Length: 191
Image (cartoon, rainbow, N blue to C red; front, side, top):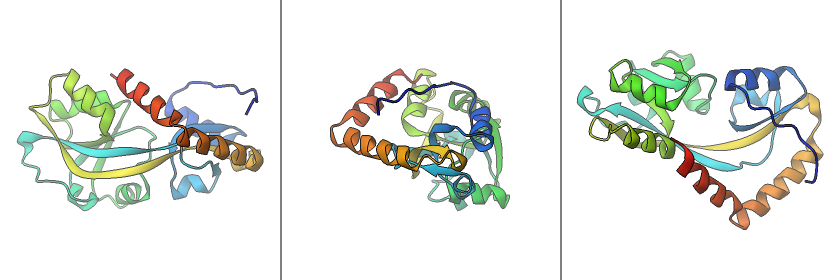
């Protein structure tokens, strides 16, 4: 866009609070109905695949839907949304969630039986499980949530013109393969 921006890395909870309460933007988030009340979104940058991981020795049958999580302790990442269906199940106390700081932390909690299962990004979590030597202990469901990932701006910013231009650039990057190349580079750096 040839426009100067300031990128400020910070913990996810703080970033969400900042974008909700100030005239700023955020990147790398899932759209949900709560966030739509105060954010204007770009088109999706990419789609992330979230799966359910569980200890193979805990007697959990194959997970085929969110309903199969009923009554379990599920590890999530603090401040993340896993889409409206998952978030609604949390609100209705269908299962207990334990919010933690990272996928690696959740995987270790699962390893020691402090969680029954966790929901996590497949590519990065598979690498972490492999790195920790837990492939014989931790299994994953075939069921997945494929969630689009966006950039968004607080509605107070009135960034519709910028969002339109960002969408044009995202479209170009998808067509020319730039997004795919970035994803592959990031996936290899994850653990």
